[in-house]
Amino acid sequence: MATQHSTALEHNAKPMEKSEWSKEEEEDEFEECVQEESNGSLTPVLDNSLDWNELEKQKVAIMRAFVEKEDSSAKDVDDFMIRRFLRARDLDIEKASAMFLKYLSWRRSAIPNGFISPSEISTNLAHNKLFMQGVDKSGRPIVVGFGNRHKQGNIEEFIRYVIFVLEKISSRMPSGQEKFVCIGDLQGWGYSNSDIRGYRASLSILQDCYPERLGKLYIVHVPYIFMTAWKMVYPFIDKKTKKKICFVEDKKLRSTLLNDIDESQLPDVYGGKLSLVPIQDF
Image (cartoon, rainbow, N blue to C red; front, side, top):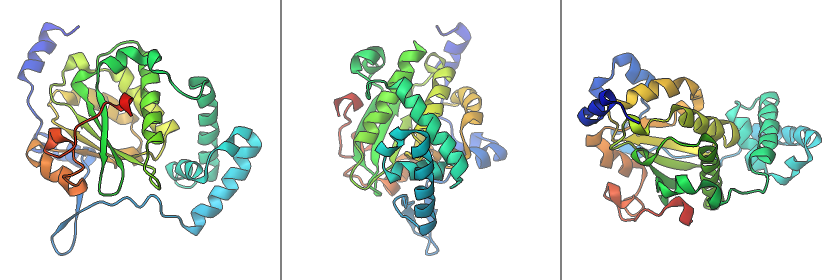
């Protein structure tokens, strides 16, 4: 329950502008959403995740041979999954193998039936906080989450909900695509929505069990009070994930999104053409 003090803060919260950050915070927290070419034009940062090179092919083969000896269920995964774990550990076979074998063990425990039933996560689904619609210019599916709809509750159910969402996204990847982009909308977010334990659990699952699935995260409509939660979560974000996070100022929101997403694929809540669809309806 929000205290009188936190309620007052929520009432006075305003969108955070880049100028309100110190220089040190700006350099550490912000990633540019676009690249500027030598001719001065702006172009989307394109995803080259599907490109293979000989070194990766060799390391995937070596890692596959090792993990299949350690866990026979590794035979059921494709080379793209093994490569994602390798990339997450900078192509270090030993570290990637340890991470992958831990994932296989986790999956047997966390998803014993191979899927999460909606009946197991009914409370979180009722919040209607995550949607999926359209693709960006690199063909990556677009997920939209509304932070003010999240309510702190049973952590075990929330963890199952996160797994359900990531499984749903992964199963709906377009052919030849591995990653998704997410718009995290914090308009109306307040301390009553803050869930540090849940945020950390989500990060752990995303980074350790679904590595190299996130392509980019745009954090939009950010109230200044969100910094309190952000500073508690930030140390748990690995360096690869940090590079994918982009805070967007309100005045640059539409132009930033349109650099990476065609208007025909942009959700209508941001001035695009597509209506949002609850992720559970896919």
